[in-house]
Length: 247
Image (cartoon, rainbow, N blue to C red):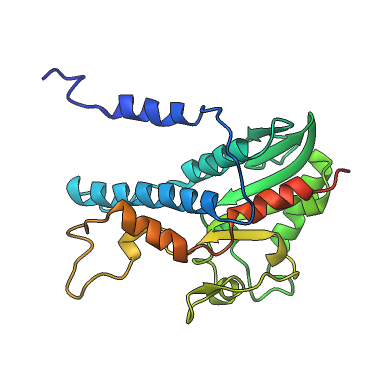
């Protein structure tokens, strides 16, 4: 086998990126969670592939899929919203560059910040306003893009990896069920979609070493996990965008 064809990644990577260009539209029922389950499925499958790669390739640290998560959210926004909406990624105005900008009939209408977790914006509970960074970020985005502050939201992949208090705003650890949304800022504008998207961290049988082997996981198991691990339906995000008032 020659030196180029022994490695197939560039071809697969090209196919992956090309898949985001699909222009097909979905028939969306906002009272169901079919899109939420689809997003969970794809994220879970990608993380499972990463787990297998870590074992098979002896990679001790996993790849980040943060930007792919952003693109997946943008893809399903595009597929779910009508043609009067236009989706842009990484549009910059001034010093602000939100992850996703949504235009409606050519005018800036809605902004979505997409995060796998809160990262450097982790709240400082020692301050009078632990979420001051988010408050200031929303104000600056609103000013630069001339959209209403209530038309700016955060979509998180998961409710975890922030603080225990933050997680409890969205997910009941004892019942393993979502909790009712609050009107308190900033939780009112944060939409953590899922719980437990990474098979690596799922509960495995006693004695199983996830750092030395991976578990065989079927699509049926992923679908069943999707049914019970939706913290905030993506359909709720779609509804908020569609009912948002213009300036």
